[in-house]
Image (tube, rainbow, N blue to C red; front, top):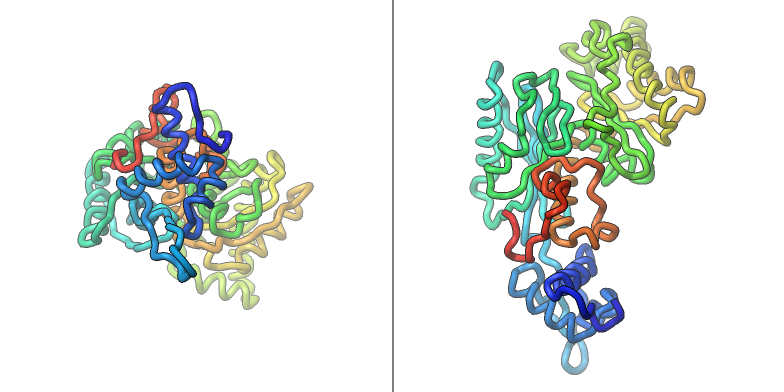
Length: 401
């Protein structure tokens, strides 16, 4: 762009690029005058006038009250984060957690629903849909532009479940395709540990770490990793599934004894207080976890290991023993920290992934550097169209959802 807007070429493409440039400037910024927008977007004032009129009519921006000044005040505009919303859903075996956020990522509401035991594959999907409908019921002016589900499963690049041990009836099910019919907006599906990693990198303890391993330690164990600031999913989405190596014992009795303890909080509190039996049980649990983590650490040499999931609430009572074993097992031990987001990490990561896809729709491939790059593997129906190379970002105000 040369200060006058793009010229030549496809007029539709040029118009979209100009729209993307203005939106990038206004996102997460204070209200700005036309002159400041034009300067920041490297467009002419005339081009910005046209784009602003279009975005204002479509409801993406609005003029704000003028500041007090001598003479005629300059018009100022802001991006309307409330013009769209995303829904993040953490799917567990016995329940779901949900978060609704606006386009700036501000969480507006959180909820939880139980899932009855023994549900069939389609029945479980129907119950999750009903729970989401109930969660959104009565909330005014909600316009969903994306839904993301975090699942305890290996998920392919299109949002279909390849393998889930906790929910085996979903094996081979295209969950993203099914969920895309719920609210007339795109749906995405991703492994829960991967989403927890996204959340920790966005707003958690991994904000300043581009290479880290994310552990989920709760009623089940799972792991994901982020390398170079991007999720590393592997060829088929199975990166981080270290627990599948039976010799590590992540699914053995010793681990389950702690994961399913009637009062795990008391167990860790007793261990922290030095009660010998509790210390021994927690240390054994930590050693088994550390063996699996160490295998990943020795391979990718990350900066940090984040312990998330329900057991992360034990804090240093769990992180300390894991750290001690890691120091013995690893040549270059990373930092070990417990999650700052706890059980909400997967849901918040689902919000983040949905927002990244909305960014792609708003900014197109030209705006990813400023809007937040979509992680490796797309996890949804939009990804399927991108992989075929025929995706067209919708015109603001007339997009999906």
